[in-house]
Length: 186
Image 1: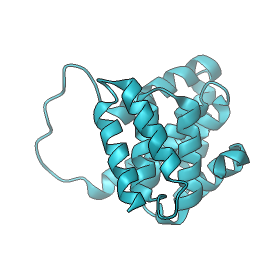
Image 2: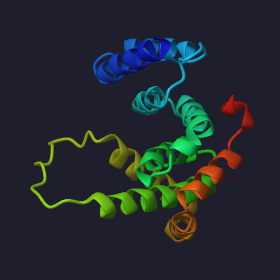
Image 3: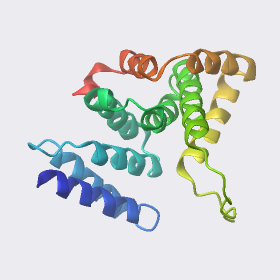
């Protein structure tokens, strides 16, 4: 039952994050605390918690949750699409302090998203674009690229992207876990 409570808290936080960020943060904190209990640590809860932390623009918490998620669930992230969001969030979380690492992770995230998009693409109508782009991952990826362009320059950023794109999903996750503070993994 603890897992269900954690998932519910995160779902409520995700629902409230744009309208009531203070309450969303409180729900997220409670959810994180409950993951410490037996059966409280489940994949879906970490995925949602990472997205809530990112929408709150709390990059240190996002990094902590992403690193912990990758560490605990890395062998469940066999599909690129499962790892791609975590790679993108981690890239943004470290972009200001570790731009070189961020550049590699962005390349790996783009490659993972691209691989899965090509694998599962179906024919059909696309939804009409929203007046304001509220899609989390494209927004975060554009923001990260802008930070990296400013910090590294376009040429160096592209070199790092190429290095990340050449990695397999498992290599990208290993790279991430090797390059984050080990204290985040527990």
